[in-house]
Image 1 (cartoon, helix red, strand yellow):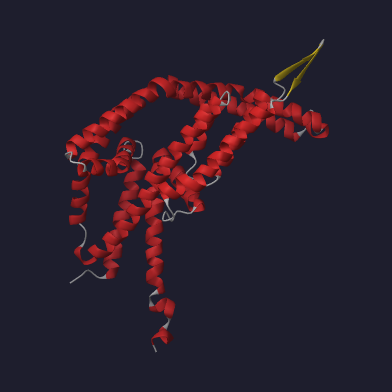
Image 2 (tube, one colour; image 1 turned 180 degrees about the vertical axis):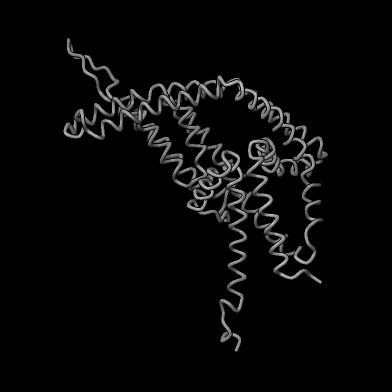
Length: 367
């Protein structure tokens, strides 16, 4: 005899509350395990494919780990130092950027940019805030002993956790399946399959899209000669999972920096007269890079790698990221997407059940 629905709801509610409390109290401690689990989930299809090719699970995980280690070492040697350097340089350049913007506004809208103008004061305040806060952030990350210790802990623990979770992934899923309540096992398996499909489409598919676009933007902008091309490409690729936001933010930042760098940068000599012209070709190339990136994302990358079955609306994603980020910090932002996917699947299932119930159809439908 199954438990009454009221008792089942009570037990599952208590379980959910306990999990939220654990996340609240242990959000700093569980970060390596969340990252390791996410990496294992991302790479599990690769391990399964190697197994189907004839390798054992252990050999498959060792091959994946060796390739991941090689890629990580290359990133440490080639990319991350430049990324940190460009981030610090961009923060230091921010006041000059706002000063150039202030000069442009003063030239065209002198009434708005007098000494007591609110716009001028706000631009100066924004530039100083970015420089001071950004400098504090970079210095805190790079120079803080605690920060270095945490980074070392992440570099050691995350790969170990990811290795063992990837090695035992099939056993863990089978163990979880064996502990499901037998009365609802088919329904729970159905819901889990939908959650897995949603997460696979978003985390694996959209994560690959972010990686490809971030690499493309960074390489393209650097080849175009943009001074901060790597950091702009990194930012654009990082937030590409929010439709249009990554391209808009990255494109606006890249074009703004291109205007700052290439406006009046071409020296034109006519006898004894020296004038400076704007390099519109370089600015157009920077804008074209993001236009091509949007075309590739919308017509090739997203349809092929993500598909149309994600079911996570951009507004819902932003809401989940904001709520979980404010409640649980960085760990909350990491788990926001999986939790949003779970809630979305459960909400759709609950809506289907509601539409099939008497509460929705009414008694007259059965007459």
